[in-house]
Amino acid sequence: MINRLLGGIIQGKLDTGKAIIILGSRQTGKTSLLKSIFEGKEGVLFMNGDDVDIRNLFENINAARLKAIIGNHRYVIVDEAQRIPEVGLKFKLITDQIPSVQLIASGSSAFELANKLNEPLTGRKWEYRMFPLSFKEMVDHHGLLEETRLLSHRLLYGYYPDVVNHQGSEKEILKQLSESFLYKDILLMDQVKRPESLVRLLQALAYQVGSQVSYNELAQTCSLDTKTVEKYITLLEQSFVVFKLSSLSRNLRNELKKSRKIYFYDNGVRNALIANFNQIENRTDIGALWENFLVSERMKYNHYNGRWVNSWFWRTTDQAEVDYIEEADGQMLAYEFKWNLTAKMKMSKTFTKAYEGAQVDFVHPGNFESFLGI
Image (cartoon, rainbow, N blue to C red; front, side):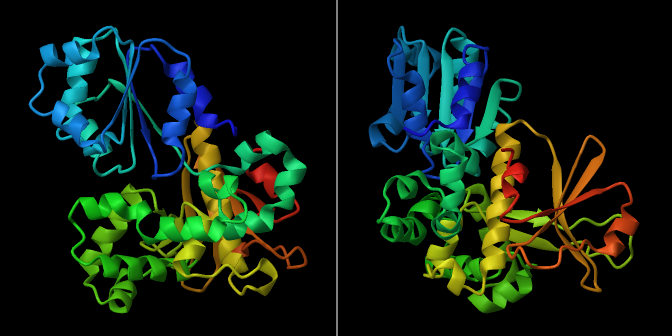
């Protein structure tokens, strides 16, 4: 079994008087993680919000009824909690009225769950995100040498647990994920009137990984209006399919001020959407795959290590650019990503002059593990 970094974090927060909320895409292993943490523990009540009877159980419920349902259980786990109506108010009843109970909830839609919990559980919760497997988790599992040997494979097929654990079936599993399962929650929300347009938008985003994204251009490509494109991308973010990186703009007039890039949480899903699993040596988009891999893995590293950072890319109207920038505790770090070890490693002089205190570095296949905390 592959140990998940979030497991230790969650165990350290048990019985601290607050609810524990785990958000993340479907199939990232949230349920398996919770079962492994509580395996063998007594007094565990496990419920799944996808089950109709569980949703009915929570209908018009009050504190007395909750106490009767929970009984002597010490731990109450609610999986896919976003499916429960008015879930925030119900969880508030548990945390306020039954303080001896440790509530743990997971959900695959930040729109449906986090938004409903933020106000009722203000000051009453620890909130974490769970990603597909990370480079660090796989290094811990079978060693740095083995995982670096699999780098090209990861760039193609990604890190979803089912993909990693079923070698030889990667394409079939990713096809199922990319066709509907990842954005099932969006379709259930009934906010997407044209599912085929959502798929076209995802495919358009997949082709533009590593490039600046224009909502106007996406709207024309997908036969949608700009507001609908913006809404769909927000829903995809809140369902943990994609995430945005904004442009840094502070010092120069010609810096791009409102630009953004959009990345996928997983390379395999990105490649499945465009049905392209050609080997690395035959690809023209290897730079985009490498950039998506590094940015998504860095996000996992920052989150699991409790690193609070601001992150951007940087570009000017003169096409000077830096791939990735972080700032924390007053220190700015700037990175250029290079897949080809023979490529010239050069940082933009315009950037280094405008941001004199920034530390600069280059990330390539020969040193990337240190960028990912190894």
